[in-house]
Image (cartoon, rainbow, N blue to C red; front, side, top):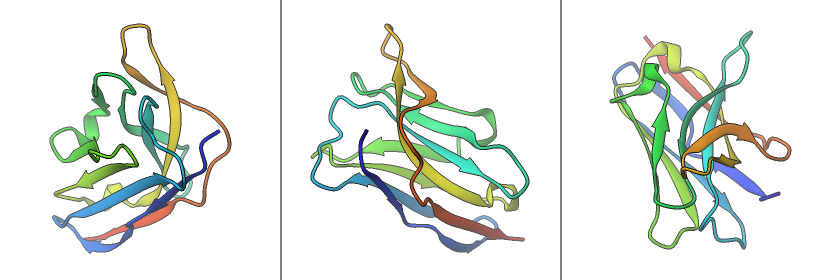
Length: 125
């Protein structure tokens, strides 16, 4: 289990942007598939975006396509979630997690291990 830590959340107005970071202290994230999840009050946790450990393939849920971008840094130590044109419905606690990967090198929303503390994203209207 990777010791992942999320950061970068905050309060932003509708239409604004935030960049979230997911890092594993002392570990490289190279070859690990990583996903971002979110949980809004009273709702189930849902996978938002993921990036495969090999090939860099990405996947997004429909509600964030064209607005969110998941990426890795060149040193493979951090996975980012760039969130643009934020909407009030994006308000949630955001978590990152190591996830599975298919034989076709596509990431999944099946997390491994326990959840971290997450980072709060609040979008005001």
